[in-house]
Amino acid sequence: MSEDMNALLLTEYMRLELTEMPEPLPGPDDVLVKVRACGICGSDVHGFDGSTGRRIPPLVMGHEAAGEVVQIGSAVADLRVGERVTFDSTISCGRCFFCAAGEVNLCDDRQVMGVSPGSYRRHGAFAELVAVPRRIVYRLPEAIGFEQAALIEAVSVAVHAVGLIPVRLGETAVVVGSGMIGLLAVQAARLAGCARVVAVDIDEGRLELARQLGATDVLNPRAVEPADAVRELTGGRGAGAVLECLGAAATVRTAIACARKGGTVALVGNLAPAVELPLQDVVTRQIRLQGSCASSGEYPAVIDLLSRGAIRVDPLISAVAPLAEGPAWFERLYRREPGLMKVILRP
Ligand SMILES: [Zn+2]
Ligand SMILES: [Zn+2]
Image 1: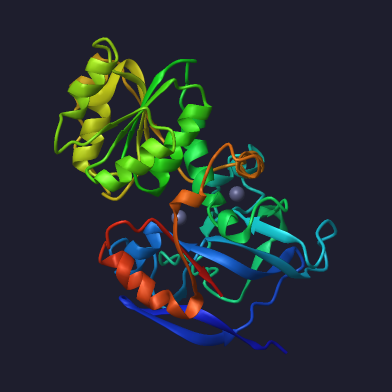
Image 2: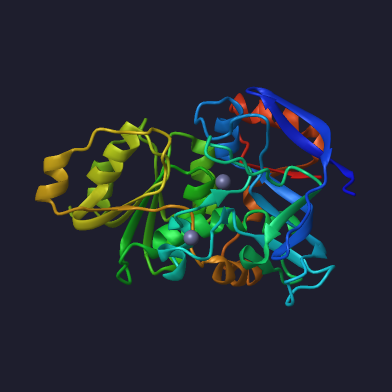
């Protein structure tokens, strides 16, 4: 018989309730994880207000989590109860063409934890317990705390995006948008060999954080035209690597304008479903536009990077709070309270 657990349920748009729900039952290939930390993602906040249409209530959100294994399915042989783990936000099928090629982020039957776009409903980790397939679970070393581990998913997104760009040692990178993913992309670009990393944002506090985390230059579009400033920094050429981490018409335009001829613009942000493309500029300057979705296989490398301090996430954690305070924190994030980056809930 299954028992009840606490969960933070989106009962309708703009309404989260701490409630009792049946504990999930792990299937043969699953492990049951006691959630110790789960980050609130920007996409959860956009799901909360219904703007993305990908969090249709009723739903338990939460896809940036870490915890302890409390039960293993009958077919799981290589994990034990008590082990500290994190897991991918993407639940890949493990069988399709893309999964076979290792591109699990492109899986034909891809589901995302804590998401319900209409075609499926997959309850997430703003709950005491969550059941996940063993194949998406990764062990955590002692050096990584649960709260830090809750950021592994976001770090993987940034590392994946940088990995899709052909970076030459000494390259200049521009990161448009200094939110969570942007600030992680700044660090990943430095690690990838970019000697100069330029962060662009309209928020001075975020630019200061970008500088602390390794940006060599910061640009505020309210004060300077980013493309002009980037050209000035690069002998008139522009940047070989640009990461667009916001996904709005103006920021995509800025990202393309910052790229040098033959440069690559990785499109990571996707707030707007469609934006206007400066087609002739992209074609005649032979800009490569590279979409980047989630991550595929970066978790082990990211766990290693975090455990060695090569990527820092602590400065990005604004608050750690009990699950019961989740509704209040969602409100504060929804109201765009200044200075808030990652808020982590502890069930
Ligand atoms: Zn997320
Ligand atoms: Zn698949």
